[in-house]
Image 1 (cartoon, rainbow, N blue to C red):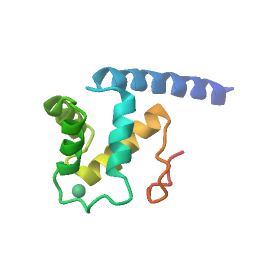
Image 2: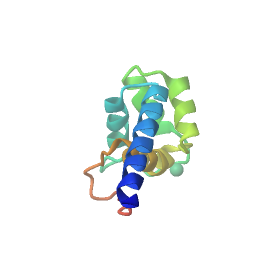
Image 3: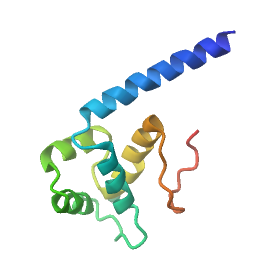
Length: 110
Ligand SMILES: [Zn+2]
């Protein structure tokens, strides 16, 4: 019994988290996915501990830079590799999507 209640509560919590996240996101979720795929592309340069690649993507897609950087910071993304690991980790789990790239090291998502 309590298993299903727990499951419902968990789903509800996830839904709220998802809504909160989407509300706070300064761009479309599809664009965030695109950004992560871009950062995670095969020929991406090694992270130089700045948001260089992220900023490049934002500028070439005419996205809002300041708000997006603030948002990424809030979710643990202070450089390109952290955007992939921290932001993807958090957001990917909440909105249930996953990069298809094979070199994503994080296999621990449920
Ligand atoms: Zn980095």
